[in-house]
Length: 105
Length: 188
Image 1 (tube, each protein chain N blue to C red):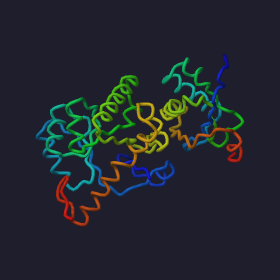
Image 2: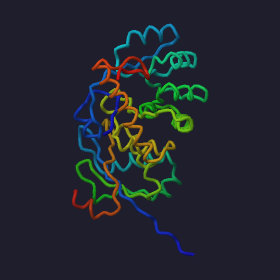
Image 3: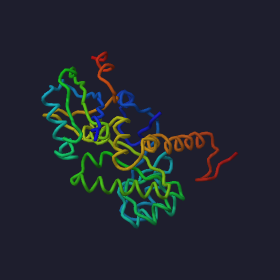
Image 4: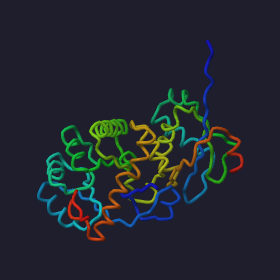
């Protein structure tokens, strides 16, 4: 039986805050919040990844299974603080390929 | 064009998050009994949009019967939600409630139950960030994503950000021109 390939989508997000937030801190915050909402099994099914090459100046890209886009969006939106910083997590757009996003960085 | 009625006045940030800032007098009232409701409704008569914040069942019943309000953020159940649909009173989903929720699971469940009932009885649904500080604001696309999680389709989710709001804005314009008489009655 043929196995369906994972239909990936790329969520471009922006963190609105007073200071710049590092990649590791944002990754931790995203994973913690997502785990709180959909659990470890959900994360593994969503195939959630934060792409390090596409992170700069509080903007980044999350790679996720297309079925989980609203759930991941909600999980990310629930983040209110990273470290001691108040933040607004703002998901800007969902892309189907990385090629279009490359022009934005 | 998307609107967020119950929010802070941060026009620049609202535009950045995909909302159209509006100049609307929004009154959030939280009466404890029917007499207080009557007094607060009379006091906020000039407000363009009145939200009843977390009322008890008796107060909500009186408010719906007398058409004193435009929306409520209470998780309404069956008989009342049908009455609300008849009187064009909206169910308001307050995202801030989720941000401050002690029990996230229960709040999500209650929100999805309210959405399910509102869809069944065709009650208008409004979603709002309910922000008290600028850090509690959320973007339109995020609120749409949230609506999809609590049981709406993408189209329905988008509607919650402009459909009923446009009706309220139209009513405001009618009031300005003196053509608005009472709910359902206008000078033609």
